[in-house]
Image (cartoon, rainbow, N blue to C red; front, side, top):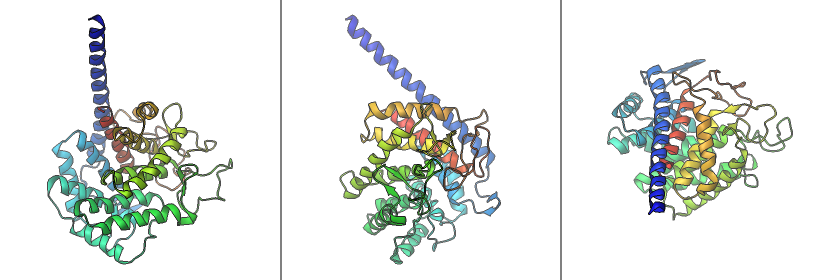
Length: 369
């Protein structure tokens, strides 16, 4: 009887511990999102960093990916209202119109699709027309940098998922394979499980210490894209299995790159010149690993400790007002936006908030597994 009572008390303690941990995660996510929505109260206003840009550029689009993830664990109507106002202002069109082929300009359609599915509002016709225009070119070599995989590939896969039109799936996969296997000789180093950012960073390019250059956030973009695409596919499909294979290769490699404090740094394997923490890559890796555990692709005993450490690290990024430190500015390699510090202000902060919300929201879900 005493043993049963002890086991029961242990289970109760675990339940309460998980609930408290989840509450901390949710509170932290809401804090930084509230900061952002207060700072950018009018989502229709253009950004002004160096020059004026429409607010459906990729940096803001990534924020909305994070906002929709936050809504999935904290369904507040004001989140949907904020996103809907943004979508309506841009008439549910890609940045630059339906003829846009740059993945950065198509990223906003991820939220258009998710919001339309949730509310039935708006229209997906501009997105369909845009994708069909690009597919009609017959080219699959537009994604010349790995960030593009996150910006555009989920748009194609999401559109396939809701239309069952295999043209979207086939085009997205062919474009992915081109970047993976052909761009610059192939941007994915399958031997090391990590990605070179683009053709400028494949060998013989090396960091100063002679190691390969694997940019943290760039790998984070691919890792997140694999999750966002697999989430739309049947686990029995050949496309899911193809992406799962790369996801597992990346997961194994990324686990070895995490630092003891829970962070990943701007350069994944070369720490000599960039020894400080970096938030965006860390958040994206937490996003992917948490999803992998929750969906049975990653072993809990191996990856749960890494996720817990990443969560602790990400907690240390947030200022009292909700501003996020340790956020590397825009760029394409570890040297961009340096030095990255707790107090440094990146050129754009919207995508950083989006990455943070993606990571925390998925970790929150994983804690209930």
